Length: 342
Image (cartoon, rainbow, N blue to C red):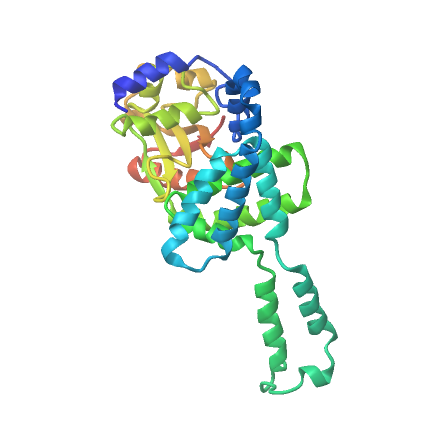
């Protein structure tokens, strides 16, 4: 998409202060199915009534294979099959599949209880044997090792394999967005445990060390600029002129990018370089023309937005702010005041 296409997109889709354009809808297929079915669904109901169930069973089987399979030469095909099939499911079938994942592919609690029983209640005769000098009996170390392994749920292998798969990290983010959507409606303990585990994994894989800090400018691809327009959640961008102003003289925009999700910032922050601290946000948004950057004495961080609903609760924002403060002060030593407001 070139900048001309972006301008057309802006004129066609954007409205000033449109608070609904960013509404979270991570499970759109149910709506699409409802809207597109119409009277034709009634006409073809007999032949199609089993199709959703067949699709569900197919995706469920591909998920099982993705977890249990050890043949690396066909694993990529299975992961593709699972991720593509998942997005074809309706809301209800996604919910069913996530509950299957949370309950049937959780950790083996029978094994965990048995290992704990051995660890806490083992007789001296059972735990005796090759004892290390000044340490515990060797059996304790063996049980601890087995316990650590048993406490890992089976769905961990699915997450780790998807993380290594092209497009997998983006898929996992979408998967967690669906989980959060469901949990907002009903509190299911097994699903909340699944969410907690996936959140922990994503936090590790998206550590600041793995992210690239990128300054977003008007010269970036239009596809990236479109993301800024679409995901600006604090002060919506009203038109192309507004976007160009926010990326022009006296302004900065920085985002965190990940190599596995190219061309799409996970989170971005907007900065205004000002002579004096602004009293209202209107002074920032409509300061035209801006002051020469050499006259700026303060940097105002006036907006920060996430582009991935599935990364909610993973605090990338504070790391981004710290990095940007350091970068702005390095490039503009005269900046003595940094403030953050929304």
